[in-house]
Length: 101
Image (cartoon, rainbow, N blue to C red):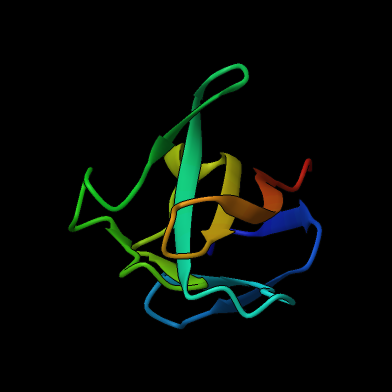
């Protein structure tokens, strides 16, 4: 079994028995669109909706499911929410890591 921790602001995590985890970012301004991103290089984030569709499930909402979570999925993620004009008004971030033994 894989044990992990999540450190972030306004993010909740639900772990499924099949190894999937679902993370949800808060959206206090009730903005209609949210985009999950993963840090690819220090300070640079890539959208997850267009890459590895079998790995990440994010249909423009506050929720993202990481399928079959492994150590390779550790890293920094953020959820950016915006209105129709794509003006980002809210961002939530988290870091997923493994417990040190």
